[in-house]
Length: 286
Image (cartoon, rainbow, N blue to C red; front, side, top):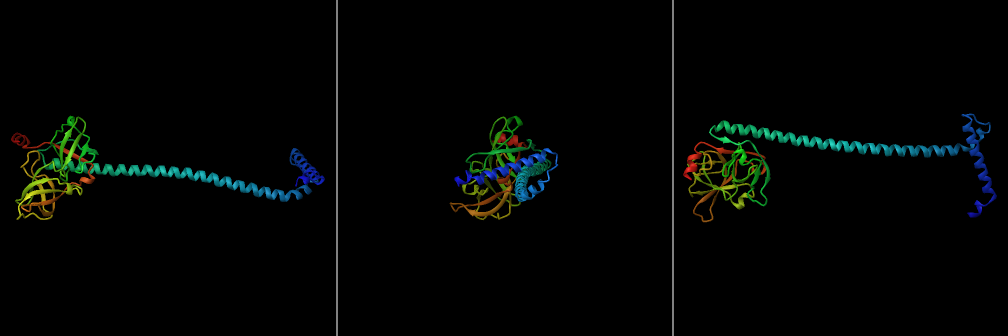
């Protein structure tokens, strides 16, 4: 192969190529006018032009595909951003709907219990870490008129009490906690007892009503409300409904498994009853 590049034939080919290049440059400098011989040259170079055009077309198509790909990528990114914005708007919409529903319910509480003094609606801002009884924090505190042991409720029923407080937030202990004892009674029967939390039940957001006699008339579906036996709660506020009747470990009495009327698992807003008729007398008695 090295001998070919040093041969006379190779030098002749180089001279012909140089001549052709010179003719083409001359044609360009003559503003489009060509020599008579350029027709022959054009015939000779026609295959070269065809290959060149194919290459140019392929390069152009590749560049167009690349440009379109970049454009599609930009459009896809814009679409993803728009989808994210719409999803956030949808979340905000559902949150606003929930807040409006809660506010409507809180207004109903005030209408049904004119003697209640209620806090502003409180938002749940977090949950007590490692608490199997689902305690949580709200965004209102002592400077909002809230105090320890104030009942925490929604329009659906009793949630728990304020167990700890600061100026700007408070901790809520739910009715699933065994530390909280609530005097309770059946709304349509002469049955009473104490509602409290229990470890095995709390995992399913349930509690129980204890001290029921063996001949209890309670049955599944009966509604349970607060009684006036414990002074920190107003009388007659809904706690939940009976799910089943079970014997105590001793076998001497029974308890009712209670499903709270409030969906504690999906709770977002609550209100606090800071005062109610008869609370002063009950506090004095305690």
